Length: 253
Image (cartoon, rainbow, N blue to C red; front, top):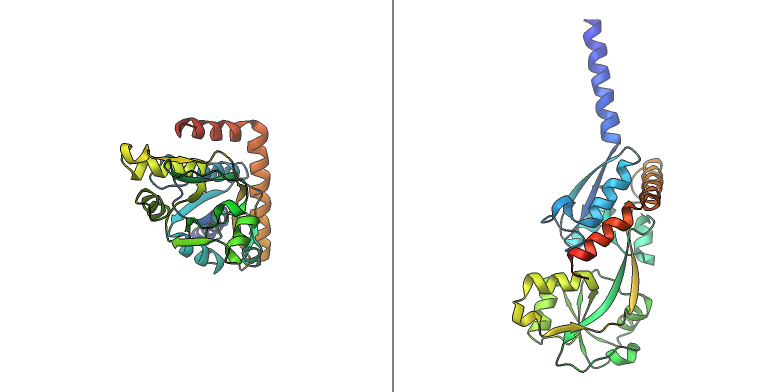
């Protein structure tokens, strides 16, 4: 009887260790970089998985709308969330990891629009489609905050690319890889050929993993440290660069 008791205790402890080594993250659709439709849920979830695996952790993802992902991660229903750019407000709710990816933002527009970006002044008078929760660097975000730009907000990227196609908006700021993926997935070949992008990258935004400040501080610091160390090891091995390069080839960049 005593032997059975010790066996049960050992199994319980093993379960606790396993749970402690499992990281539960929310995220949303950001195809082709993050998507439940892709193998390994996309390149960024794969990078996170491999970085954590190097430190002995497993990762479980829950795909949700971005606003829901943020709220549930913030409220300690998950350890954190993948796919966020740092800003002052978010830093009150989360710890930010080292950058996983640098999002290079460009302006997509119809070829019929004579547009070239040099400064914020070039955007005045144009209808700009912005997906809620997205950030585009301090210069653009401050211009929006100060009411200098004509912004049309929508809840998701497919709606914005559709609005651009229908000429509801003039410009759609978006990550270069993501924008091209949206065109290929949601528009016909004929419609896609009518869209181009200004080659100037107007913002480079670091994308990180975030950990809620409401989870026990010891676990938050442990997860943050483990991930950053694992990510550094992944980069030092060359594996990180090979994965990103393969993603660019797949996207035709």
